[in-house]
Amino acid sequence: MRFLGVALAGIVVVALFSPVAQAKMTLKDKAGEEEVKLQIYGFSQFEMRGGEGWQLAKGNADDGLQFQAQRIRVGFNYFHSGPIAGKLFLDFNQSHTSNEGGLPKMIKDAFVAYRHSNPLMVRLGMIKTPLGMDFTVPGWNLDIIERNGLEKGLVLERDFGLLVSGRLIGQDSFTDKPMKTNGLEMGTERQGYGFGYDIGVFNPAGRSSAVLWDDGSAVGDALAYTGRVHFDYGKPLHFEAAYAVSEQAGGFDPNTPDVKTEDYKVFDIGVASEIWKWGLEMKLEYIQGTNIRGEDGWDQSTVVGTLGWMFVPQAEVVLKTYQAEAERGGSDKTKLGNTYFGINVFPYRVTDKHRDLQRHKIVINYVFVNGDDVDSTDSFSGLGGYDSDTYGVQWQYKY
Image (cartoon, rainbow, N blue to C red; front, side):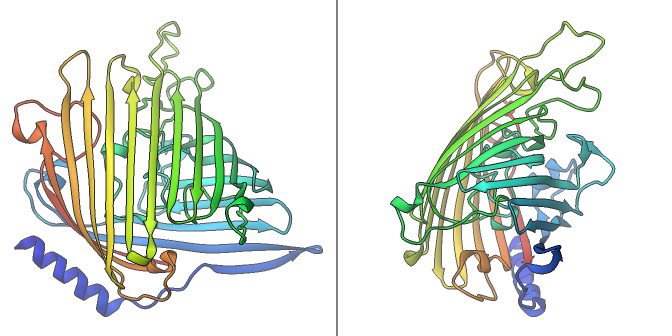
């Protein structure tokens, strides 16, 4: 009953007080004879969370209700009339003092980009690493209330590095309406046609839960490498596969330079399909990490399945499941599953474009838990996830 009351309260509050948001705000100027453009945009997500699983994850003993923000983000995209672009993306819900990956945690993206053409773009700076189909979806475009740690815990997250990318390669063979990338896209923000790739080299993945690397580790003694290929055929088909390695994932102590930890290795493959005229969206992803935190024999794999149905123009029902299996130190494998049942409400449908639907969104989720943490004395030996049921309501507005 508490969950139902919270859900209804969330819908009423948002419906009464949400104005229609605008798209990006754009400022233009001249640098000599050339035009420069600055886009300002962002989104915020405010929540009510509860349930035993949520409180245990926060270290609390009861299952009471808690209010919080998930993200409060503001971004700035810079475009020169030539091939140069840049991005700064901030999250004011993160610490501005704690240093992760060489920058305060509130700095999500900070890089400069050179776009030669669709098949060749180069980025340098703090970048989201190109691994994890679910992870590389923008935070404003999630189909549930959060990124679950059973998948997110295995990716490399963000770090300083150099990334070479290509998008929409060969699109003329599939469509007579070719698209052009802006050099800043990371995941599948827009459904196009053709092949794509990403090849990157980064500092060790210090923001990843699967890697132990901090400012005390000797810089330059290890690196992380990523590679991804993908193919898009508009909305009906997206496919991608990625592989990454973060060297010495247990960290590096300069006092014992001869002691080496194992390299963390992670593989991800995913496929997605959207049949817009029926309101259906389907996704399937598999991610496997080995030598978590540099520990030989600590491995985890997670299967992520998603089914969404827009059953009326302003509401969508979503079923999303994470099923993980982990093994550590030669012990028996343990399992944990988190399944989200959710309803997404779009109170102000401005256009039929998927991006515009996200301008105002109410997300209502209940998370069902299965696995060893639930029905046995064994605890899940992997990363992430809830070990008891939880629920939440979120209001997102995007501008």
